[in-house]
Image (cartoon, rainbow, N blue to C red; front, top):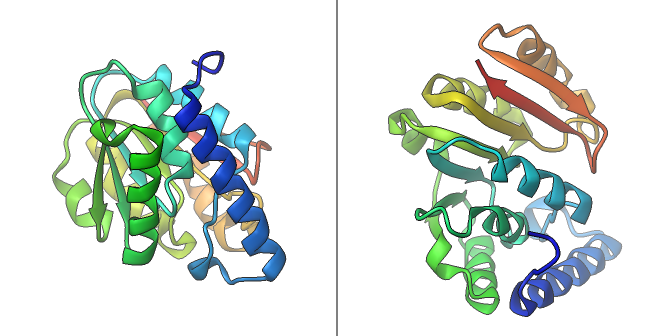
Length: 196
């Protein structure tokens, strides 16, 4: 998966990495900048996604599509699409450009809007990457977990970098008997949950 990344995907990843670094140096606030995950987080979620059971692949918080490219590596050949949600049209437009430039449009369904309404009706979630408004992680969690297949994987990003906001959520998840969960110091902190 990592040894034969298509040139179009690799080129777009490097392009987005440079934009993310530049926008961070300029001090743009998160709602206005790309907000890409670190490459090691990308590899990590791709490995997890590749081991997920059959079912729906969901991403909540597309931004410019960087993390979606990593998920697309794991998703090739599965015969379905990654459904990714972004609330901001400007970020969604950048993501569409990313998917086209990387040649992965056929693997991705882009939805502009709030994922919660969709997720209430999706009964077959096998993998979900959550990188959205941190204040809403609890709501997303309670929407996804009941609709996740046994063995399904939920990964929540920014659990260490946003610890002040997310510690109560993390404690709740760790005590939830519906999942096995672990917090890992990869990237900005990844909370990995496996549905029992």
